[in-house]
Length: 267
Image (cartoon, rainbow, N blue to C red; front, side, top):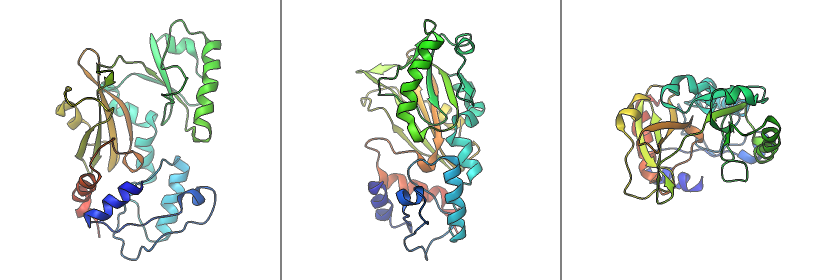
């Protein structure tokens, strides 16, 4: 986050406040740097927080006269995939949610030939956990594999289990073609390549990106990917406060765009 902090400072458009993230999460009292010149509402940019942690941060900042733009309800709307899914399902991989984390594989296999697993906010891609399962997977095999999933998510495990239809993504020189779109105050403020794909790839259709400008949050992200057949699907969504910039994305340009999206809302 230090690069983003420097970028925000470089724009000379923001007054910034830091807090003792690690110690605060561990139970210490919230400590803030000087915030006498802060204009409300305030945008949080930082690491992911569970909903109850975000609620606590929101309330403690509010007690210090700092009013976060994204209220806890809006954070929940976009941070937890099962909450945003009904709004994006027409253009997303199909999903079944198991709130108690007890996945009934027969139910899943009656809907999907191949499927992947994440909790309410993250998968564990890049580990030895299978990228997908299929009709040949037994309940016992799945339950055994899930031990790996729970090992990697650990204390970060959030919500229930989302089982999603596995999509065949188009590849360019071995890389998928994914884009991250940041939305702020009902506007698209950035569209960036998000999978280290080559320069010469098909672009995200603007009609699709524009379709999702008005979801239930002032600040959020949606990730889109091109499928092998050339069509496009939403593969992820998230709260803007805790969504990272794409590799190589111009952070100064990004913070300038945030400012211009929200400037009329400040005191």
